[in-house]
Image 1 (cartoon, rainbow, N blue to C red):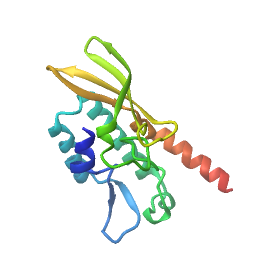
Image 2: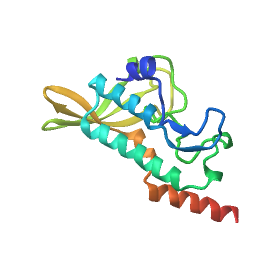
Image 3: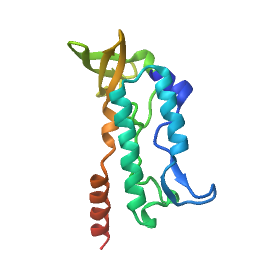
Length: 174
């Protein structure tokens, strides 16, 4: 899955919609681009319906929140918008070594019926202290293990979370 993500898929976020290519204000999620990404996820057979539903819910929350926000919050030229994450949610990191998926070590493995939870760790060989640790879950469906949870996607919020964040930042500015 990680090799696919880094070499074939390489999208790290949710695509924003702009009224025109030269516009700096985004208006929500670009659903045409998002649906292409969603289809790419489905075709891999790596992800459970649970993961895919959560991913779509994140996109819908971002879209709703962006549409409610004033223009001052939606300017792509003002840095990282609140609906984006400063790290790659696929690894909860900003930097990683080449081909890191070849050095992932599984730890804290727990099996319960047709579900597993585990952490993957990387950076041990590179001397990262402490090594990167990332929570995952997978579910066995039709004799195939599929990712059902990835910790990094917890970085995204609900519409209420984004509204609170905007309000908090507005209050700080006053």
